[in-house]
Image (tube, one colour):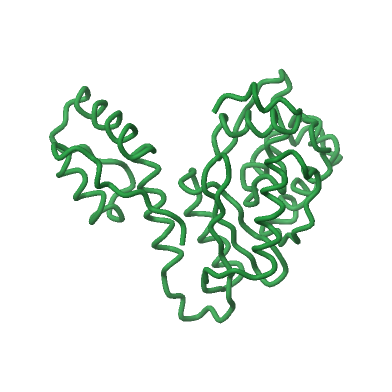
Length: 250
């Protein structure tokens, strides 16, 4: 199972919010800070980061993701093999369907819950954490990738999305290691130069980070834009592929 940070080190003055996080987190869509002033809420968030190592919102997303992964799906007879994989940029969740890897995302990132739910619905499967040849291959390949010793992945993919999204993801796969493309260039590759926004939206729906390299798409002005795993991770990945890891800020 993916790792849920412990709240044991959170200062006792935040016990009320800690209790909510540990018992009522599924009831609300936003973080409640009961009876806290704006200044106190800011202090809580700083204390949370300093003692837990992540933001409160990230902790909430991890708890909700775990609930989805542990849920029972009575009408789903297929198995979706899962693995938690440690990387230099944080833990990742990998999910395999019968044909290949259908989800690889950083634990705690935005929209992970929706992606887990979409995979479950599309493949009608139960999530099962275990090791097999596919999870072992992915672990080995990611390890080599982060050592700058692997440029092309052999792990099979199973894309879950619309026909247009899959076309956009195929275009991502065509971007060479160490290079970048703009959203406009990606749209041109698809034969529809005006579909820049649609391409950007499709990239945002990519459920397989790194292997389907949406991190290689940047703005026309060269600026880093939209990456669900966080722009700091995107910056690191691009620097890694350029052989400039030491200059990446993370």
